[in-house]
Length: 145
Image (cartoon, rainbow, N blue to C red; front, side):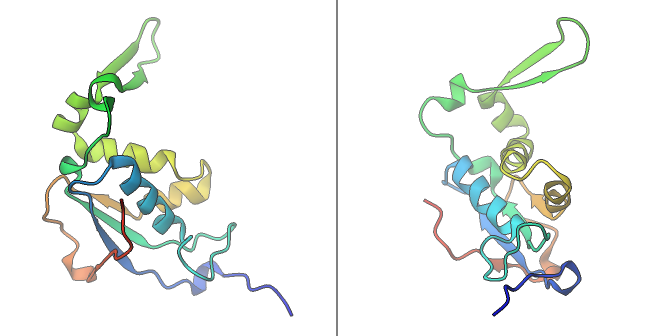
């Protein structure tokens, strides 16, 4: 008996929608990363991009547990000497919640071409409305604690 290997051209992709309202940001990001990779599918193959499309709504209403909102920082560097910039997550979640969610999901994907390709299938919206109704997305039914 041979092992089944999925082929990239044979993968049929669905659209899933995840509501982040009242759920921890990291738990929502982990669920989205698993769907983007295709790890929920029985025909998952690690070296083939067999993931789905994911829409995350209500990213602004996702919660950070504990004291992360006040103690966690987003760091970036300008490339110049002394150019380290730090932004508190309280400010980041207030101004750009889509970026915070995208950054969390990106960190949970593999850092190679498959991860980069998977990230192109992600759509994140701060509110409840989204622009992808024509794709007929299904609600993600597995519980996110």
